[in-house]
Image (cartoon, rainbow, N blue to C red):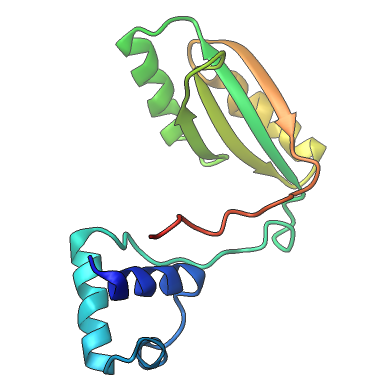
Length: 151
């Protein structure tokens, strides 16, 4: 990957909806050369896909919640059962195996407290092998994730 590829990745990460011809002009490339580079980056796995950043609030999801989960043990069967249940739960947006006090950190969104109560009762409380759950509500965003640092 050279400097031009890196610049293309930074630009696509900021706004992947820009036409290839516009990107090419920014980098002093022909549209076909820029397109070839983008396709090569996709084939290499550097670009995993494209998506739109949606407004959580415009979708009526006013609560952003982080939930730390502690399991009863670190046995493979316990971890596997928990992870399978998380993958099957559409209310859980993200799940990360973590180090420290909690075993996992989940990211969940909800319309309001009543909706979060439903998620807690129907989804989170039903996860297998959980011994402790600590919930943190995000009050206000300070910095939004804008992508990976591409150097």
